[in-house]
Image 1 (cartoon, rainbow, N blue to C red):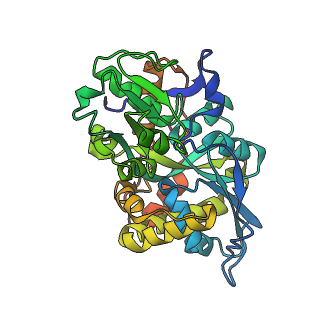
Image 2: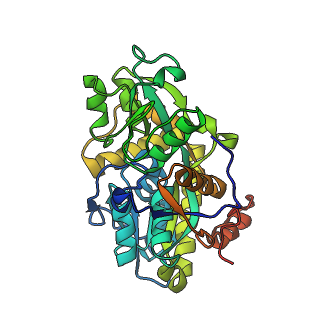
Length: 371
């Protein structure tokens, strides 16, 4: 995978031939329904002073790559920074529905993958959202049937799944195929490799049934495939500088950021503290995340799934802006997306103020910040 080009400004404005982009571009692709769980989580710090808003509505996915939100809310680390301002949380199963909720004011802040963030920024002509922080890196793998595929070259002629047409993993796989010198029609998925767009909910069963030879997917789907007899052939992080690439960002509506900067800063402090706690207590954090998943979905992840999945995700305050720019560039090269100006998608001033106060290094917006 080519190194990020931070001087190139891209967007995920949909190409005319890409009808699915209006409902795609999720890092995880688990559907589109939102589920309110604020009734379960009051999340008001006892005796805390209320900030400029009575409450803050936070959206995220019930997925390990959103563990900063899962753990931060589960452990009260975000609520602690908000004092008397209540956390109202909602979970989503796909990026587009979370962006719609942000645009409608149903949520104020969201944890979300790079593709829907770019698409939301582009469709609003830069007026809907800002990326204000990072959350997670990595957690994406190519898992294959070891009986059919033993080397990367063996992928030629095989059926490999990605979550959705044009989503983050789909673009990454198409870019990898292109760099191998192989040809695939991005729209149909037909070519030297058959790219099969398969919802992550059904991919493990399709793999088990033999109708898929492998999949380029995020966690925990990748580890679910391994539990069904698959083998990790490639970890996408190995293709990126320093083995890091953005999988989850923190976004905020520009309206809420303008009206309640103190609340945004409090959520960011909670996120920074949560990531520090996760990294200092990985085993406890894994248990906390799984407890949150059980509460949200009714079923925790099995040890053989969560253990390897957890190890492959890095939790970071850095939004890894240069890698987001590169991901958009890869989508443009694949013919799925149009070019546009991403300048202003980031506002990292509040985060950098928090990091500086904590004695931590500031993070870069790769030239894509608010001027």
